[in-house]
Amino acid sequence: MVERELQPWWVRIGAGWGAGVLVALVMVLTTALGAWLYTQRLAQLESVTAIVANQARAHLQSWIDTRLGVMRLLVMRWPERYAEDPEAFRRDAELLLQRLPGMLALNWVDADGVIRLVTPEDGNRAALGADLYQHSSADVGRALAEADRSGRPTRTGALELLQGGRGFAFYWPVVDGSGATLGFVNGVVRARELAAAARLEDELASDFRVELADSDGALLWRSADGSDWRFAATRRLDMPGGPDLHLVVAPTPEAIADETGVAQIAGLLLISYVVAGLLGLVTFFRAREHAALQRSERTLREVMDLLPHPVYVKDDQGRFSFVNRALADLSGRTAADLIGHGSDVLPGDREENQRHDVADREALAAAACDRIFLFYFSSCLLLEKEASTPLIANGVSEQKK
Image 1: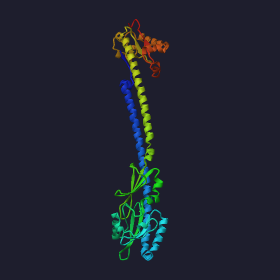
Image 2 (image 1 turned 90 degrees about the vertical axis):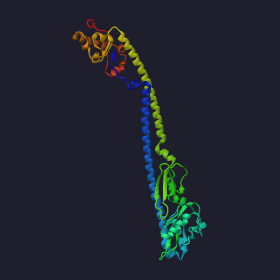
Image 3 (image 1 turned 45 degrees about the vertical axis):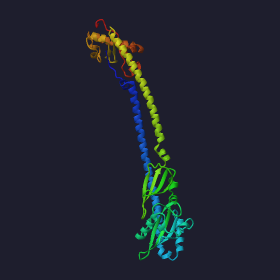
Image 4 (image 1 turned 60 degrees about the vertical axis):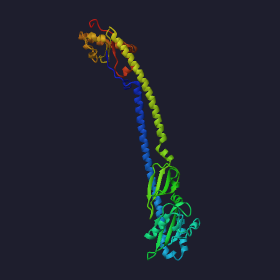
């Protein structure tokens, strides 16, 4: 017995394997899609964070440069105006602080490192008369000595201020015509006021965490506690005569979850896995049914091979698609030789064979679908879709016999 049959792939590899392959394929594809979406969202989040960090850095650098410009103005006026009238220094410094908020104080420090004038007095009286060379932080003495030696402004690193809180200080030396240091204009910056004046917390706190720290890692200020600083962007701010100031901007965990769409992607993957499982079950049961049908058809065809009468199946072109052993033996050929050919390959008169072809077609035209099914072992609907309607005969003429 020979038959021409193209089995579905899930039948050829087995029900269990076919369902497993389908489930694995769907899960791999959807996981790859989810990973790609997540990567794209991360890239977008990093890009947004970098833009925000650049904008915040430009704003903060402009703020610092403006305050340094105020100190330079006071330095230039000291020899001509303030040396004889220290109170004028206090009045001008207070006016400048009101117009340019953010600095904690503008002080005058004499050549020996002692604070002689503080502006404003409220909140800064604790610093009045303090010897900065005796400050608890050695970096204060270092910044003063370097400013005295170089004649240029310097900055301390992060320290605990005499006024309270963490911050840093600028020292801009006032030098006379002979090069001798007359004293220093001292600008004190508390990190909390710096962040508030630069609006770092107000404008960014909803979606970003912000941190100010020295280049050596000493922390000045942080908008929120927490250890999750993923996707942080760090920007350096130029500072005179001291460690650079680093601005760190990072999205909050809530912003990360919102921007990356982790919940949405996880939901998509879960749904796809459920769909993959359902497809796998459908494939498994279809493969089992198909395999059972194939076994039933094979058994029936084997039974037909045992019949002493010739049985065959023809397609709509009049070609054999199945022949049993009795017909093959009668024709004197193998069953494989008959498949794909018409009745003209059978022994006997050609005209007689052609009449049998006509009779087969007429029998088909008069036959009911369920009667066809008894011999073809497949559904009529499938045959109609594939345009392969069989012609059936269960015997041959006496001459063929």
